[in-house]
Length: 579
Image 1: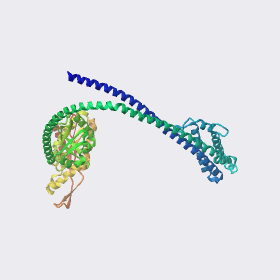
Image 2: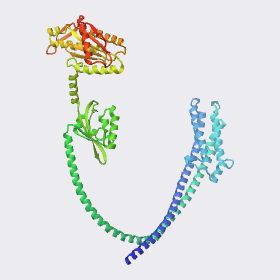
Image 3: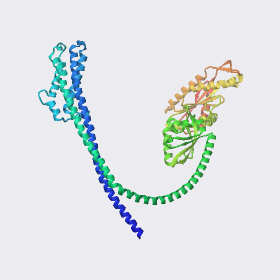
Image 4: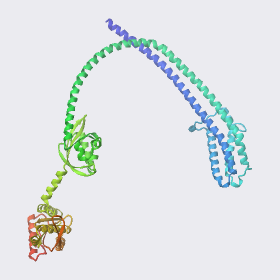
C-alpha cells in the first residue's frame, strides 16, 4: 500500500511539474517568437529600404547621365552631315524616351524596379514647389528635345535657340538640380536605414534577455524532472535487455533456418542453370512489363541476342514480328493478371523474329511461376525451321508431281471437290480440261526418257501461261494433264465460250515446235532436238454439286478420246453438260 501511494505521489508531482514547465515554455516561446518576428520584419524593412534607396539613386543618376547624353546627341545632330543624321536622330529619340520614362517612374513610383510611390516632404518640395521645381525643369527639357527632333535638316544649325537651351540646361541648371536630388535621396535613405537598424538591434537584445530568463526559470525544475525520468528509463532498459536477449535467440534460430533454405535454393538454382545451359531449346523467364529476366545460351543462338542485350528488354519487341505484337501483349496481360491463359499448358506454333530481321517458325510452351508474389512466365522455345522444311518436302512429295512440280492427281481431286462446293454456293460454272500429248511415245523411243522428261516440263510451263492464277494445272499421269478452270460465268453459254477460248489457246501453244536441249553428264551443252507435238483435248463444263468427281473426270476423258478419234490436235466438249 505504501509503495502504491508513493507511486501515485510521484505521478502527481510529475504531472504538476509537467504542467508548470509546459506553461512556462508556451509563454517564453511565444514572447521569443513575437520578438524574433519583429526583428525579422525590421531586418526585412532595412533591406527593402536599402533596395528602394539604391533604386532611386540609380534612376536619378541615370537621369543626370541621360540629360548629358541628349545634349551630346543634340550637338551631334546639328554638326553631323545630313547623310548620317538619321542614325543620330534614332539614338537621340531613344535617349529622350528613356529619360521621360525614368522621370515618370521617379514621380509616380514603379514596383517593377523598386521605386516607391510616396515621397518625403523635402523630396516632394524639390520636385514640385518653387519657380525652378525639378519636375518643371525636366518636363520642359524633354519638350524642347522633342521639338528639336521635329525640325527639318535646314533648321538644324548651331545657332538654333532650342539647341542652345538644351546644351546650357544639360550642363548647368538641370545637372545641378539632379545632383541635388540624388544627394537628398541618399541622405534620407541613410537616415531611414540607420533608424531601422537601431530598432532591429533593440529587438534582438530583448530577445536574448528573454532567452536568458527562460533558461533561469526552467533549467532547475527541468533537471530535477530529468533525473526522475532517467530512473524510470533505467527500469525500462532492464526489461528491454531481457526482451533483446530473447529476440537474439529467435533471430539466431531463424538465421539457421534461412541459411538452410538459402543453401537449398542455391543448389536448385545451380541445377536450373546447368540444365538451361546445356539445353538445346531456348529457356527464358519473363517478368512484369514483359521484361526478360533470364536468357539461356540456346536463346542466344536461336535469336541472335546475347544475354546482356536481351535481359531487361521487352520480349515482344525483341522476338515478335510487328504485326503480332498487339495480340502477344494482350495475352501476356491476361497471363500476369490471372497467372493462366489460353496458351498455358499448350504448345503453340508461332512466327518469331531473329536479330537480323529474318522471321522463322518456333514452337512455344509457357508455364506460370510466382516470384515475389508476382506471376512470371517460364517460356521454352524450339526452332522448328528444319521440321517445317521437312513437312513442306513431305507435302510437296504427297501433293505435287516430282518432275513438273505441278499438282498431282491427289491434289487435283481436292481442288476439284472445292470447286464443286464453290460452284454450288455462288452459282458460277466451272470447267475441267483433260489433254493427252500426241506423238509422245516416239520421242521416248528415239531419244530416251530424259528427253521425254524435258518435253513434259516444257508442256507444264506452257500450260501455266495459258491460265489464270486461280486456275489449277495438274499432271494426271504419264503424258496426260488436267486444267481446272474455276469461277466462270453464271451463264452456261458464256462459260462454255470461256472454256473454249482457253482450250484453243492451250491447243495452239502446245502445237508450237519444241527446242529440247540435251546436256552431257558434265553439264556442257551437247545437242538440241527439235520436236513437234500436239495434244488431244477434252472439255467438260459443270455446275452445282449434283454429280461426282469421278463422273466429271470420266466425261472429260470421253471428250478427250473423241478428239483423238477426230484426228488428234483437236478440242472436243462433252456432249451434254452436267447440271
